[in-house]
Length: 107
Image: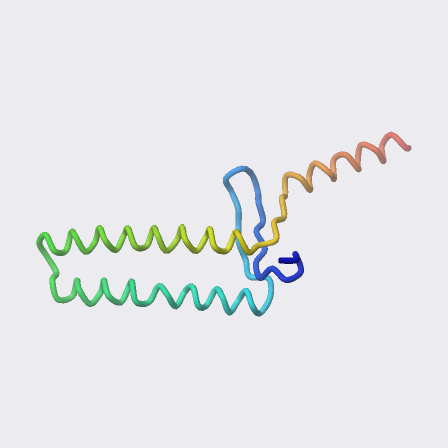
């Protein structure tokens, strides 16, 4: 996939810090579809808990909901990262500093 065709931009601020944002209409469409996949998970949890508000069933449902949310989040992040153009801020700052050093030497 060419960089121009990638639907997301991943801005990396350090080793573990990053932000993923839709780049174009396709990115927004895919983000909306991914968010729509959250509705059955949350709706099912709310429906089940409204009928079984206490006891062991509630704790099991809560654990399953937390596990489903973790899987949904990790899966979405990995999927978007694979389809994102990466911009590394640390690398850009390094290039900027080098250019400034070169311009100071030239003066």
